[in-house]
Image (cartoon, rainbow, N blue to C red; front, side, top):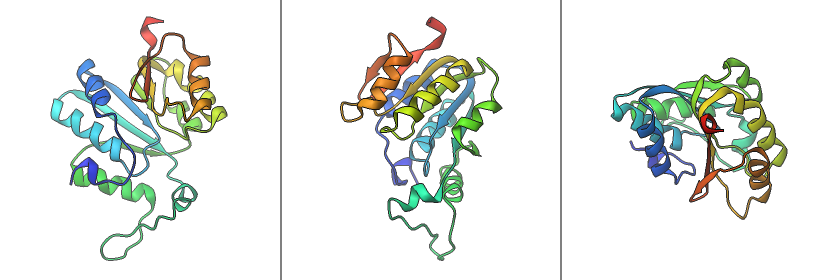
Length: 184
């Protein structure tokens, strides 16, 4: 199995490559993981690098979210799995170690000390300004390195607004935005 075999949306491989290359060790956190396509890629790159990087993957893995896509999940033997179960199974099949934390991202922030995260990736509902802004405000103090997100695109003006109101001097490439907190 490869990450591209996992259902989902992910097209920023080069950005994740850059982040793994940038840090020799540390804590990476991904907010919004769905079934693990991007988490699987990042976890694989960390594993291949041999670096001492821990990857925490946080999602509430809500059945409501998945059912809105009309998706049914089952293993070949028809045993039903929860979305978090599918995520964990996908990570196991890829042979990558991640810490799957099933929790609302607004609550999960309490698990981390200020300036304890080297790289934070935000991948949440791109059309929800208030959620995006709240998550940025809550999580930014926890990051000592790079805070980033995806979907910084014209078709998601509320996400762009939340990011632009939060940071001055972001970098962008192919819909990914990032900000270096240690340079602020």
